[in-house]
Length: 192
Image (cartoon, rainbow, N blue to C red):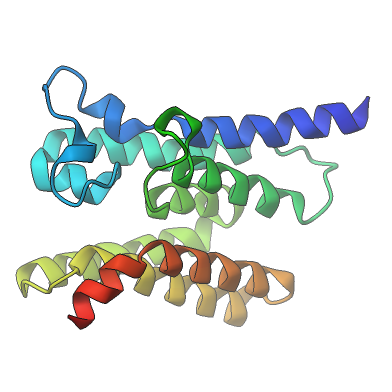
C-alpha cells in the first residue's frame, strides 16, 4: 500500500503541474495564448498580451509549484522526494496532457517549488530575477525574460553550492540545465 500511495502522490504532483494557468487566465478574452506572440502558454507570453492576466498566470504557475510540494511532501519522506515532486510538477507544466503534452517553459512553476523547498534562498533568487527582468525591460534587451529566468537559475545553483551543498547543488544544476534546454529557441533567437 505505501508504494501505491507514493505513486499517487507523484502522479498528483504531475497533474497539479499540468493545469495550464496561461490558458485559464485568458478565458473570456477570446485569445488563445498558443496562437499569439511566441505561442508559449506561459507567463512571459501572456505578459506580451495582457498584463493583469499575466499576473494571474504567474500566481497560478508559481502557486502550483509551491502547492504540489507543500501538499504532497511528508515529514518522513526520503530526502530526495521533495526534489522528485518538484521535477514532476515542472514536467507537468512543460508537458501538460491537457495541451497534448505541450506547455510552458517551467520558470514560474520552478520558482514555486524552490519557495517550498528552500524559501530563504528562493526569495533571494526571486529578488535577483525581478531586478534583472526590470533592467532587461528598461534596456530593451532581446530575450530579457529568458536572460532573467535562466540567469536566476544559474544564480540559485551558485547559492545552493555556497549555502547548502550536497546533492542539492546537483539537483539545482540539473534543473538549470533542463530549464535552459526549454529555452533553446530563445537562445537561438538571441544568437541570431
